[in-house]
Image 1 (tube, rainbow, N blue to C red):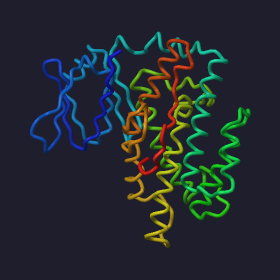
Image 2: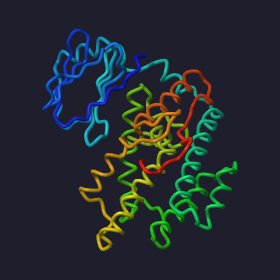
Image 3: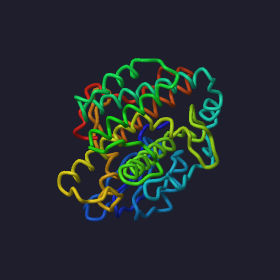
Image 4: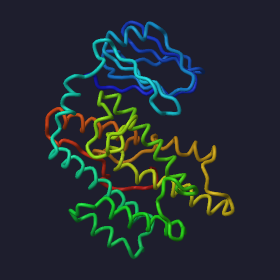
Amino acid sequence: MSYHIVSIDDAQVSLSCKDGQLTCRVDGEDKPRSVPLEDVASIIITSFSASLHSKLLIEAAKHGIALILCESFQPVSILLPANRSTDTLLTRAQLDITGRTKETLWRRTVNAKVKNQFLLARHLAPNDGKLGELETVLNSSHEHKEAMAARVHWGIFGRSLRLADFIRDQGQDGVNALLSYGDAVLLSTVLQKLFGVGLDPTFGIFHVTREQATPLAYDLMEPFRPCVDWRVAQWVRRLQREQPEAPLEVTKEFRRWATAFPLEKVDYLDMTIEIRGVIEGVIRSFRRAVLEHKPTIYKPWTPNSIKWAGC
């Protein structure tokens, strides 16, 4: 499988191919950008005004490249070559994951999520009296570790923003609405990368499969949720400081702030790269773990040296 996942997100762009190269011409630029088609695994198009030449569609199909079209960053269509309507080997490997392997993969995911929650909580409220309790949960192997950590984490989160008795409820407005919008941006990014590497998001390891649901995306996004929490915390603190009377709601300005989240940079494998690149790396490790039947290959994201100034 070719390595590169090419993301097209410029507002006005024209895509074609020439001499075996994917060419991308952006309005206002003198020269087109290019990359060899043989090095491309998939093309994700989030641009709201991209034009595609029919020659690209044909050449992409001949090279086994998937084209993923998005609306509001959410994948809505996947164009696959006739000989790649599905990755049979990968799909079979997903279907053959044993219950014990799923438990191992999910345990690694939850451990990473709780660690990231603890690191964020310690940054937001270093003197909070419940930090010790959250650290105890982090170091435990309790069956309900995720739920126990969430209860403590959201309490610390709320107090750090001077929100009395804050409870995370996806159906509520205010900060809850901001968090839900940020989580939707995260989900769309995870879905883009899952489709990009050929994983079927309908086969999850923990979340329940339902009609039109994508449980694997819900599974693998969990360790990244604290990044959304931090992004929202930054927004709320800025409003409290500059516009204390302003309502906490999903405005046009907040949407711009939230949708830029995948471009923020975090530490990953001794590098500092964009979150969307980290998500791709994690998903690639999951893909390899599934194909090789070795769950320890899967490396959920936890930063080596956490710096919450960015994400």
